Image 1 (cartoon, rainbow, N blue to C red):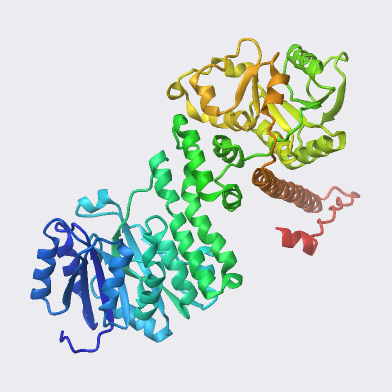
Image 2 (cartoon, one colour):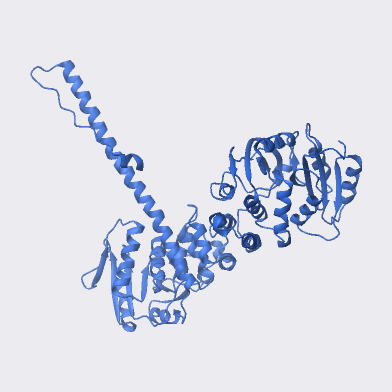
Amino acid sequence: MARDASIDVTVVIYAHDAEAELEDCVKAALDQKDASFEVVIVDDVSQDKTPIIANRLAVAHEAVSFASRIIEVDEVGAALDGLRAARGRYALLLRSTDRLRPDVLARLVEVADSTSSDICCPSISLVSPAEAQGSEHVPRLERPLGTTFEAGRIVDALFEAEAVAPTVRGRLFATRLLRHTLAEVADGQLEAGKDEAISFISACLAKRLVGCPDVVSADILCTEEPTTLTPELAEELAGARASVAQVVRFLDHQGVWEAYERGWERFVGSLVKPSLMLYPRQTAPEHWTSVGETLLSSWGPSVISEVASTFPAADQGLLALALQGAPSLARHAERPSHAALVIPQGVPETLVAEVAHTLARRVSEVALIADEDAELSSDLAVAARLHSGLSRLARSRILEHLFEEQGFDCAIFFSASREAAWDELGARRLGLATAIILGSSLATLPDDPLALDIPPLIFEAPAIALAHVCAAPAGVSTSGALWQLLGARSTSVEGLSAQLTLASTPTIDGNGRLLAARLLETARTSDEAFVTEHAQRLRLEEENDALRLVVAARDKAIEQSKGGAKGEAPAEAPPAPRHSWRRFKQR
C-alpha cells in the first residue's frame, strides 16, 4: 500500500513492554483486504525489546509507522500521540495484547460511510488471560444493538438502555472525534473508568452512532472479573473518581449539563456498581470497615444509595453495613428520654421485662410496641401491636408513624435480623438513637472472624452495625474480635441507658439522614413492587380458578345432554369472568 494513497483507517496500537506479543498484534492488523489503512505503533517507554521490534516492523511493512515516547504517560496520552500522526478518516485503538480479525476494516468503513456515522460499534470477542494462553477459547461476544442512534440519544444508548457497551478498543471512530475526545481526558491520568469516560464524552460529541452486531472486529484481552473485594481493589476501583472529574469538567466546559445529567448519573452508576456487587458478601470480615470507608470517602452516601437502588442484586440491608465504618447516619444531641421498645415474636418475656425495667430507671417513659404474635403477659403494658404478615412497606410506615406520633427519641430493637435492620433505618431517618438487643442465637458465634461461616452473619450484621449500642443479655459475649469488626458500641443490658446517652453526638449529619431516607425508600419501592406483583398473581389465579369452573360446568352439561337423563335440564354454566382494560394493562 502506497504511503500517498487515500487512507480510510488508522489503527493505533499501544505498546508497553510488549516484546512477547507486539509482532503477532501487528501481523493480525495487517491481514486486511479491500481497505486503505495504516498501523501506528506507540511505544510508551518500554524497558524490553519492544522499540527494536516496532522499528523492525516499520521497516519491513510500508503500512506501519512507529513512535516512541521519552516520558512515560498513560494509555490515553499515548493513543493521543498516535492520533496526532494519524492520516486516516477513521481510527481504531488496540493494545498489543489484542488481535484484529481479518478483513474487518473494509466492512466497518462501509457501514460507517453508508450511515454517515461518527462511531461504528461492532461486536468484540472478550478473551481472559487464561484463555489467551491456550490455542482456543470459548467466544464471549459483547454485542451492540443493531440500530442507529442520533445525537442526543447516544449517551442514553450507552449508559441507560445499555444497547451498546462503553468499550473503546476495537471500535471505529471518526479520527477528528476521537482526537477531540482524548484531548479532553488526556491530562486526567485515568485508570479505572477510562473506557466509560471516553465513551461518554465521545457520545456527547458524536452526531450518529451505528451498531454492527454481525461483525466481530477483534479479540480483546480483558481482565478476569474479581471475585473478592480487597482494600487494594476497592482503592483501585475508587480511582474511577478521576474519570468522573474529567467528565464533569467536560460538561461544565461545554455547558450541556441539562441535556446529559441523567446519562451522567448512569455513567457514575456504572463505575460504582462493581464495588457494590462485591460488598460485603465477597469481602473478608476484617476488611469490612476499611472497604466501607473507601466506598464512603470515594462516592459519598447519596451516590451509593442512588446507585444501589438501580439494580436488584444489592440488598439495601447489606448496603447499610457499608456505612458502619463512618458516622454517616443521623444522631441527635439530647439525652434520650422517651424510648420505644420494639418486640418481635419469640423474644423471652423475662428478657423483655429485664430490658424495660432497666430502661425505666434512666428514661422518663418506655413504650412497648410488640408483634401481634409476641407472647407477653398482662403485666407488661403494650402500647401498640403490629399485625403479623405485614409487608416491609406497611411495617416501616406504621412504625415511623408511631415514632413520630408518640415523640420517641430512641428506639430499642430485639434480634439481629434483616427486619430489625429495616426497622432501624426508619428510626435513624427520624434522627432517633438506636440500640439492638442481641439474641441468644448469637452467643455461639466464634471470636475469630475467619472461623465464621459468613453468609449467616451477612443477614445479622446490618442491624448490629447500624445500632448506636449493641446490648448483650447474660450468656452473650461481645468482647471478641468479631464484634469489634461490626463497629457497634457494646454493653450489657444493665448499661444500655448510659451507653445510649454516650452514643449521642452534638451534631446531626444531614448526609446520613438523606442516606437513611433513600435506603428506606428503596426498600419500600422494591417491596411495593413485590406486593403489587403478588396481588396480580393472586388475581390471575382466582380468574384461572373461575375459568376452570366454567369449563368443568360446561363439560358436565355436555355429558348430561349426551347421556340424557330425561326431564333434567342441563346445569347452567357460571358466567365467565370479565376482564377490564385496566387488568389487561397491568398484566
